[in-house]
Image (cartoon, rainbow, N blue to C red; front, side, top):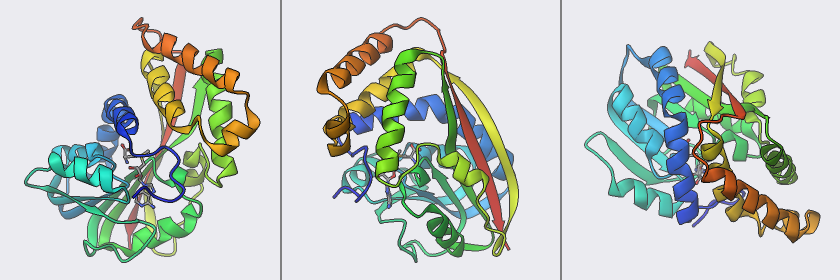
Length: 261
Ligand SMILES: C[S@@+](CC[C@H](N)C(=O)[O-])C[C@H]1O[C@@H](n2cnc3c(N)ncnc32)[C@H](O)[C@@H]1O
């Protein structure tokens, strides 16, 4: 089963993209985890929209958790994640817009790059707080902006932004996280913007793998000539194999956390 509305799929190509993404964002995410939760002990941590489990393992390796459970609606990703599970980590197929979670209440909930795919993120984030024990932490990480300094990246981003908006999703969900108000049930611990300059070859590879997932999308076929998309794919491929250290694209990632009252 793939999840309704999730546009980037759970194929081998999607797996390869998430592997690369895990490497590119590992340091900024572990810095965030340590800053917010590095000193505490967590009997149960949850990783929502865990994909094949890269973030789940990063939480287990970085924080002091007795158990870390990854939840994802993709059966394929859950199976892949289980193949690499450890003593602390386990994985359950579940649509995280639906509460209560099968794991029971948690002491920490971590969510990276998922709100961008949900059509009512405010309601869903408020539900997540209900799945925390008192004193538990909710950590959200989403892209707030991407500044391309290369025309190929700029072209790609214009198409993806339009396609996600057509599906009531937003590419820059970090803007939503920056304004998210969960004050009725929690207090905000941190809200910071982290800047990350990414190598051209890594950004191009992530984009190219993504493009291969969405190029047959109905909105894309209706609004962009096939020749444009093929040319964009070719240009991304060319950038992806050039391992010069150039970094002509910068991500700005919103990292925010709340403490349940
Ligand atoms: C962009 S990936 C991010 C994976 C991981 N959080 C990371 O940062 O590497 C989004 C993940 O959310 C999952 N997903 C999308 N909608 C979901 C839902 N409603 N419930 C659970 N998982 C969902 C997808 O299957 C995918 O694995």
